[in-house]
Image 1 (cartoon, helix red, strand yellow):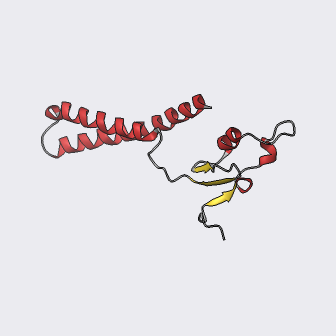
Image 2 (image 1 turned 30 degrees about the vertical axis):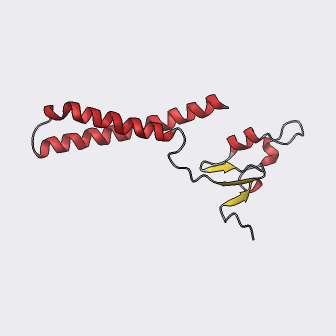
Image 3 (image 1 turned 180 degrees about the horizontal axis):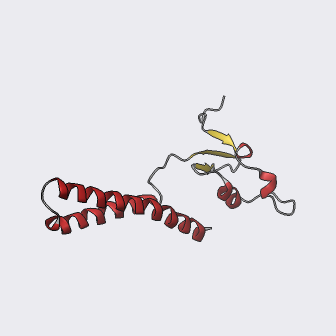
Length: 119
């Protein structure tokens, strides 16, 4: 039994290595990394992949931090302009949900652009 845990699998089980090969040469590690399904990373040996447990430790922590920082700043700046009572709370929640929805669309686009530029 493999001591590294059940989340470590041969790369060939996740992707078709023959399809990635060029001119009879085996695929490069960069091509294998690009072809791996989301949430999987290539091990150092180049033959196995494992689940990526580093949530929010790549570029995404910057995006989440920026959303929280600018959202808090906006809330602080415009708090006096909100109506008092429940209508102000509802307006703040609607703005927060809109910001999270927009961030949910923008963050993946930015992350993909960063990955494309790195390869």
